[in-house]
Image (cartoon, one colour):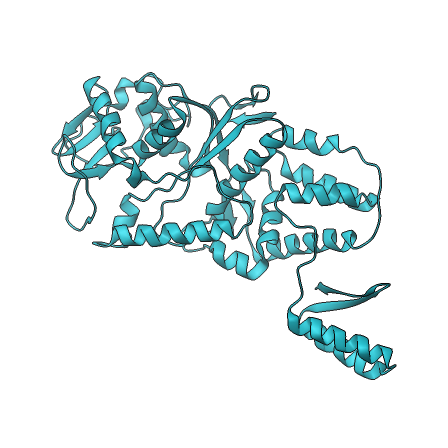
Length: 421
């Protein structure tokens, strides 16, 4: 199994099975309903974990919830804790509806604040961090390799969190003093406050996996500053931290990154309700995980058409011998889902339905047609009775009524099939 590593800029081999393979994928900052782009690291992490297990690995996936963050305070002054709870519930509900199961651990930043305080204390004690008027900052100058993940030159790093009291404009916050309007805080040696964003993930990952684990995942937009700073603060204490860094490409809508700040987002809930979870999953298969992926109505309709093509093929009782290893080879080579999709289409043309059915299930896609609503089943049964009575005019009328609901009725040897258009 080989995966591209942002840190080394090359594809690298995983250790042989059984591993272990411990994976930490950055999750959402919970202040609004998650958009479709937020789901990409979740889907990738779940697919990858399950594939590794099939290949004989002891694979574990941790997917965190960032429930302490400036964005949450800004979105709900004086009520950030309640918003974070509600938005966490939304995220868990929406990702559960993708039908992939859930990660092994879903830690929340608010659950590990005492551990974060201890971690910051170690950095301060060893001279890697300093306090100033209730804030604590990491000394970027103490890390001679700062920028190795993102490719940023240390002398060209822009100020991340402006404060004239910092020793160096590049230094980033580990602890932030409580401000008016912030309704959550914790006591610390530096005063009442709350953690900075970057330290939360270092601590959540290390609390579960220890100082070293195999894979750290997240969106490409997290490479700098978030992941660069995670690596710096963990390395400062002599921790190896993550060996492989996987950064998925961003979703683009109308040529721009999908983001709440841009205002071009489609929520995951909206996408599932409109197109169905399996269309959403097949859509994610169409792009390599490390590349950008265009999101549009057209792209989703194409994904739905592909899904229908597979399901229509599976209605036929056909079989064929194919090389099932080619699918494993595609997924073992940097988890290449577009190539896997192309293989499935080749198997469809050959009539290798058993292999195609099992392959779709790898990605959480049911090969079965969705169940028709009871109303349509009733119309279909009435049409069967009309045909038996040789009332073909009524049978045609019922066929048109079924079609008006977006379904097609097909006559087969055993009776009929109801197939969504």
